[in-house]
Length: 199
Image 1: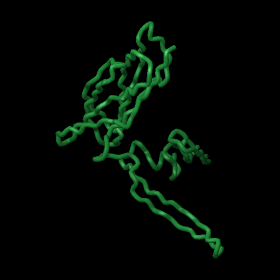
Image 2: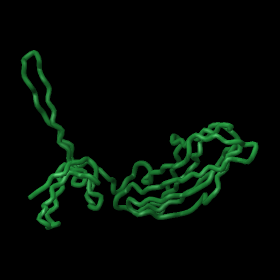
Image 3: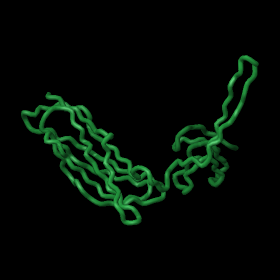
Image 4: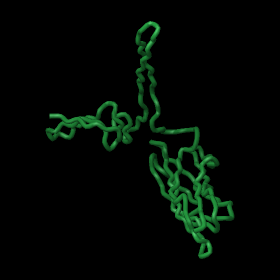
């Protein structure tokens, strides 16, 4: 007997299972995410066929067609455009605090991920706080190597001395390439804003 399960995530992908007990007969549906984009395989390209139809009302007929998109990169292996690392931040975005007692201490966790699937990335992490209203506490400079798809969490603390709206993003990543050169990346359009009101 066979059972078919449908879903649209890797955890609940559409696949067919042979319930006879032979685990080798597990087959993912051809259009499931697990089959199209398996993270454990080196090939990170897919082909997409887009079928369309349009109605010509003047002649009362339906026109059908297809667009074929071949070798679309799902997970880049190497890149020469843009930073190979992605950064996100976890922090509380709106806070009330009584500054007459003491400054505000805000936990800030920065997540760095190597978005390449097969290539290691060696980089230097650095932050430089240029605003007098707050300061960063923690490891502000280090060098690290991330394997393909690997993530790194960097815990910091922000000491804020007054109320207002502040952009906590002051990050610089310097990537070391295979030929020995350094490529610096800053993120002026990326803002990590926090709003602090007086309690």
